[in-house]
Length: 551
Image 1 (spheres, helix red, strand yellow):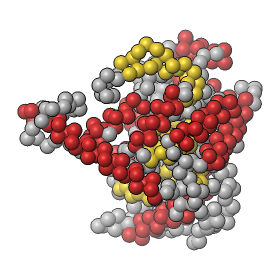
Image 2 (cartoon, one colour):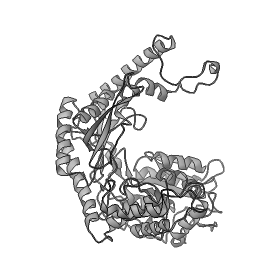
Image 3 (cartoon, one colour):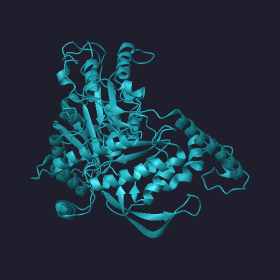
Image 4 (cartoon, helix red, strand yellow):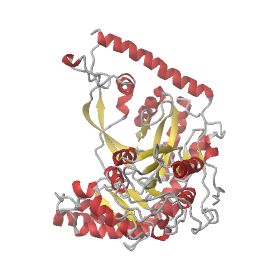
């Protein structure tokens, strides 16, 4: 397929699936319709059962949660009244007096929420860290004299806090040791920065070496790396689709995918999270009715999904998605930011997790910011796709290239995982991460907490619900030298606040047992053990292990 607009295409029958390419330079009459000459999608077995849990809380929990927000909102309006009359000092951003007749900039609900609710518990976020994000790390103590509007450092360091919040899945983000000698050598030879874009003077031999290694690691034809993970999505999706194209996006996709989709100018339609029945309906409607008003065929249909959804802990139902993609001749784009290096027998992400062929996925995207302990991202797939992006990617044209020491850290990490460094420690860490994940999830469920997601996802959302308990949970754990990330609105639905716990291969059993003991005590103290071991209606949408598609 050609430029973002694509060539002349119609939703008919396709007989050239083997040459199916998202990034080719010229339209060639490929279509988004149904084909009879591809394999029957229901014949291939799904290699791994999908075990996920999304339990509903008791009714009284939701009642008290909404009551808490309601009471907080009433007090917020009362305090805004006092601020408007000058009785209470307003520390929030406000319009200047001479702009009072302009359209207000700061009067939406989110600003009201930040001013009156978030500020009460703001001390639980943005804590300054002063060490490597290993299994344990150090925090700089801070206090506030104005109810969390500003903070000041006390000069005290909180040492050896157990880190349950960083995406350091394989423990590769660590202090310097002799195994990092090659990174030091690269720093001495190349320096820190490149000071140019990939299309100008910013392509180094280290970048080429890394791209070849990424392609080998993923078992695809080619790969291209970028200096920023977020921009890998937001700046490359507009190069692949444009006006006249359709994007089908999972409702829980990351902000970078959403931004890239919006910047592309393509029509965006949302399907329910991991729900292949709803996705198939969207695909059928798209092919049947075509574009709005004109009813012309869509130039391209692109399915945007993630490997692991970090806020839900759920894993993409890849076999079913691939079956639909093949049946309806759509393209598939997978963001493996949280899954690459973290799941699968050899740490190669969701494709490896389900034992599938990487060629079934048109665009493999991932980041180096988590499992690899570095920065940046990649796009991988067919050589035609990567060659197309080298010319048309906004990131390649306008963004500074990846730092050479960062490139070397990623090279070192991939070789470590693949075992080409002469050791098996990388594979052992992948296996250790899986063991830690299963152990921690099982213990939390046995204690009575509501835990979301797949049983093998190293991202573990522990549901808290009530806004007051969110703050108390994080503060009490920090007193016990345990660091967690708590998440609430607008990152989650208003009533679904949670703690997002991240597993790491660097966690010892002693670390995990210490955290579990503290969570058990805190669960009793704050009454957080809401689980009744009752299935939610939501998992019915996920129970598709025997799902077959018929032509």
